[in-house]
Image (cartoon, rainbow, N blue to C red; front, side):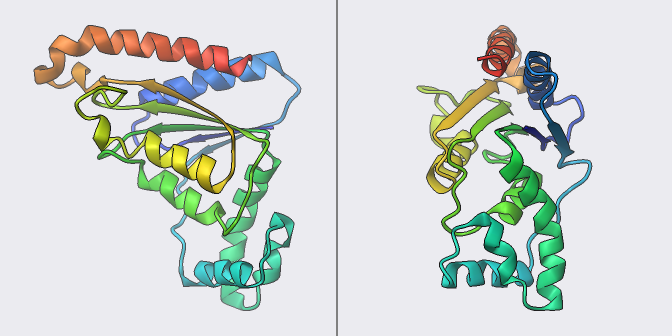
Length: 212
């Protein structure tokens, strides 16, 4: 199953275009496979509350590492309400063989819409080993290796550390279109050709990654 998430507030975001390119190629390569789509901007996931933290504490205190046993943490009506939010999101994530996330960089990091989803589905010592994650990103500037703003990249770095470090996922691919602000910022107009080159390379990589 492919779980496809989009987090961009902008309907025409380059991250959405890249994630759609991957999803379409993936579905053409395997038309019979299951596909689930969530637009985290149009249909936002609620932020976690105190009851969620108590569920998390119970999982941690009792050493529960089997995701199918997380429901054992539900002990009150408040816990049940929190679990009602978590359960379908977690079920989709666990069922997926491939997780595709379209996510732009906002203010050097990820949008709160994606962070809310991550918070809801993440529990202590939780492993998603064996799955594939593909991140389709868009950034207004240039943040790649050697770029002046490389140290400000809390977008790919955060997601890579989270997915590989916490979820223990080894197969993670990042596809980025950079310098998108060159299309609207006169001060960056001289970098439009570099943006077009970055976007074309990202589209090609997205299509290739879907059919490997």
